Image (cartoon, rainbow, N blue to C red; front, side, top):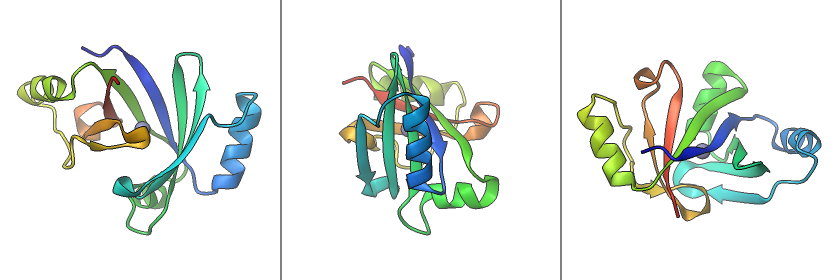
Amino acid sequence: MITKIDHLGIAVRDWETAVARYTTLTAGPPQHIEEVPEQKVKVAMFEVGEARIELLSATAPDSPIAKFLEKRGEGMHHICFQVPNLEEALQRLQADGMEILPGAGSAGAQGRRVAFLHPKSAAGVLIELVEKL
Ligand code: ZN
């Protein structure tokens, strides 16, 4: 049911510095920059082969990214898996006891429908699911 790793999310404090570093690292500027008001984040996407790196910074003090940075500092924030059908994936995972966070099915970056699973459901890692376009 998971077709690929869509992207890896990295929480960053200093947007300009992080974008500059990943521009150097991936040998090119981000292919996509966007603010996602629903999630109170600003994202920069860097394509790396078939997957992408997503830099995330907070746009409000009550953003989930602001809270994450406060608790754990900069670094790996989540893994995003692509699924063909979000509802089917969520139904199956919920039936198997995975905890789905509130707001499932809302719009993420690039208007794609996303859902998040509680880190305790995946060995301490926040999991994002995104529906294939
Ligand atoms: Zn993401």
